Amino acid sequence: MTGSRAGRIWGLVAGQAARRGGRVSAADVCAAAVAAVNVTGAWLTAAGSGEAVHLMRVTDEVSEHLAELQLTLGEGPSLDVSASGGPVLASDLGTGEAAGRWPAFAPAARQAGAGAIFAFPLRIGAIRAGILGLYRERPGPLSAFQLGDALILADTATLLLLESQYQAADGSTAETGPGGQPGDLALHRAEIDQATGMLTEQLGTGIAEAFVRLRAYAYAHDRRLTDVAGDIVARQLRLSPDPDLSRDGEA
Image 1 (cartoon, rainbow, N blue to C red):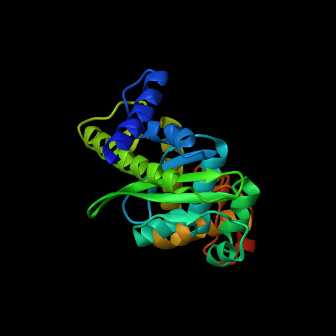
Image 2: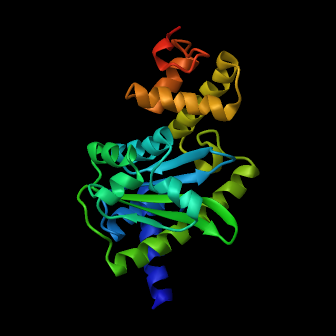
């Protein structure tokens, strides 16, 4: 039964690759998951060093926003998956339990258009390759069958992502970022990294504290993290060494 299910899932992933006219990659798992697990959208992140994560693929704007919200707010299902190493299933973001667990993320995710979120680790043994995130517009749990499919999809994404990372180590194409990351998403992450580096000079602090200040400014001003990073890189925004956010402003 397990073998036939895995074969069916692989067929769905391979079918997505065939439709776009390319070789099978971890990105195809996101598109396959939307249909197989009956969710609204999906995203895939690859693990980096320290707090760094690389957003590899999204199926829609809401998925991208949900992934970025968690990075900005420093809380959410994906971060819990990173900490625990196990799946996190939030079938209703409107409950008191969700609000207590993620006081900033839960309401922001609902406002973005998500009623439920399911996050799965991409791991083999001690190797943590990233996270597969799924969301639904309306609250509701995964059925036992859908959960089984999601777990196999996560395993499939893990293998494909590790394969792409090994290939990238030997020389990736010019159109992609780390591990086959699409060029536009790679650019967004590069801007966040560059802005954080610039803040270490502006604030006279380390990388970790600079990233915290970057996230805090984006959260306090209700802006996307990538937009704030872009302004800093373009030197249109300068943060003050004083942690009082009201002192931060245009350069």
